[in-house]
Image 1 (spheres, rainbow, N blue to C red):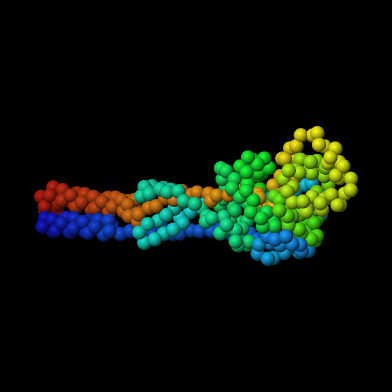
Image 2 (tube, rainbow, N blue to C red; image 1 turned 120 degrees about the horizontal axis):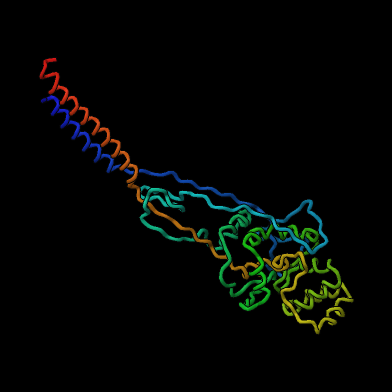
Length: 333
């Protein structure tokens, strides 16, 4: 009996020490991250000048074989986007995750921007298209925009062309604008590019002059109020002596500033800065869950296992005691 008592006391001490050690231990979780970047050519301008190749913000041009189109069509390249559970940061005290961790109660839940400001991200052309996926359309357009020639212009919130771009340009189209722009203006890539002080793309002039005389006249009639740079208007009329008479013949036709030939994405005919001001991208927000490294769930499970083993040991000793008292000691087995 003395041996049995000593073993029981030793087991109780062992259980107490194990519980203290497990309660003091913390855990950590791995940190996962991923991503990629896509490099696409960009068309933009700053001053009233001309060159034989498009000027990108990074100073690089695009050469090589391009598909040829007669104008009036554009294609949209689809992008893959999605979300996956990930632990974004792990420190010595906390773990921050973009998705809830099953079986654990977060110490705090907050919403944070998924990216820095658009202007900062856009400085790197190699990351521009990929980084755009972290943005979405704002509730209202920006208050100003810069023309391709660099002039700061106020953007009226009631501007019909800006509203048309906002309503008809999806987030996927905005993300993939560079690739659509490259494809649409491929037939004119070798021509000199001239920057104007209006909201339209520098190469829109070449595209318009490749259209039928009817579509040229309709475009000039419906958009003449926003064709604010006389240099572009004069250049268009110089190329077609009959066009001015066709436009004048439409004076009694109501103007529709949103008119675009069938099959053309409305945003592709406008300069990127005007489209960005209309879309006015803002960073998407992600929900962040923070957890302390208490590993409470793991500790509780381990404690249950230890207690279970201890109970089995105690019952084993009690069973031995009963057998010893009833049979072995009584009958001197």
